[in-house]
Amino acid sequence: MSGKTGREAAPFWADDPEGAAGEYVLGTLPAEERAAFAQSLEGDASLHAAVAAWEVRLASLAATVEPVAPAPDVWDAIEARIPPAPPAVSGDGVARILTLERKVRIWRLAAGAATALAAGLALWLVVGLRPTATDRQYLAVVDRGGALPALIVRVDLDTGTVQVRSLAAETPPDRSLELWYVGTGAAPRSLGLVTDAVDRRPIPAALRAGAEGVSLAVSVEPKGGSPTGAPTGPVIYSGKLVRE
Amino acid sequence: MPTVEAPADAELARLIGAVAVGDRAALRALYDATAPKLLGIILRILQDRSAAEDALQEVFVRVWQRAATYDPEAAPTLVWLSAIARHKAIDRLRQDKAARLTQADEQWLERLADGRDGEADLARRDALAQCLEAVEPDQRDCLVLAYCEGWSREELAARHDRPVSTIKTWLRRGLIGLRNCLEAP
Image 1 (tube, chains in turn yellow, green):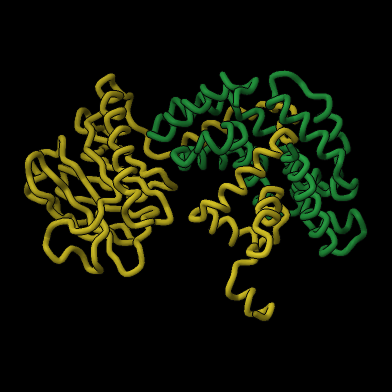
Image 2 (cartoon, chains in turn green, brown):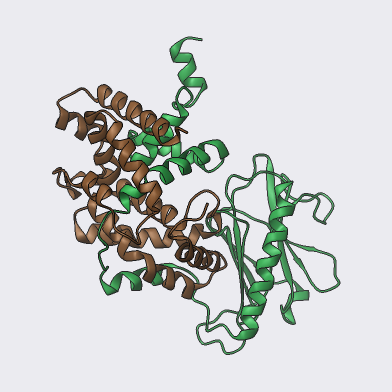
């Protein structure tokens, strides 16, 4: 294999992954290599392990610095940037979130056998969220062990719309992601495909009476959506509407 | 393996777990416990205070987004957080080269050797200090300035008056020497 062909076929770190991982940690990779390496890290367990090992080896050097108290407004800025701000969580709310946490673990296990998606995803479900809402707010945060929240799904009972906003959902090649809702004791019904853009659709009749306890799920389907009208592929995220 | 920081680390790990399920109070507690240290680390790379505080913001937004990916088996909490802080600082520095004065702090190794209680795992720190001692001085200088202060290959090349390719070789050799020393039985 000539050098040039080899470079095109393999990533730049192929001949020295350990050294490249070390230089990634040092921060000395050239910009392009740094970006390519960071991107591959997400899906490559051995690179990830090599990087973690370097972080651990060198960490004591960074630990020698003197702490410096940040200005008070730094926290305010952080808080302003982490959506959403849920209302004070009642004891009941905490219990529900813990339930959700257990479910996330189950989903992770289930998803482990399913299609490998590069990014872990999360589903944020907000129902009836209004600035002055009294007792009509629902929230669920579901994280499949990964990166950014994938979707925000807002069901507005007043306007009768479901708004689906994709943040970081990554659709596997030649597949579609389909969103489903599942009422108690009912079969899943489609809420349509997950697209890249903000998408508004009418609220299904079954949800108009209220959304308490309704589950949402996203499954991997053939391109264009499930051919049968029911989920056929693995469910990769899911969440239950929680009343705050 | 138990370390001196184990109890604090367990508490921080618990907070990260809570952040992963959207607990904002846990993020605040994590911030209170670790932000000063992380800002200290960032300020050695980005000497501009306001750029450093911007980067600190980015760090905690990322922690909020990525808490679920934290793997306690792979690294202690502070190592994970410090890594996020260093990478944010370096990314910012590469975008804005004027953010840092290229004036090296020569005290890194002394501070590492001095040690202070309550910081990182003592045994690990001693091992790193010893093994850095064993690395060739030029290579060591490059490793330390890159890691601690965010020096690029080009900046190190200018400092040592060598081609960039030589610096790359030094860095790789230094890293491998360091690893072999740290992992020697």
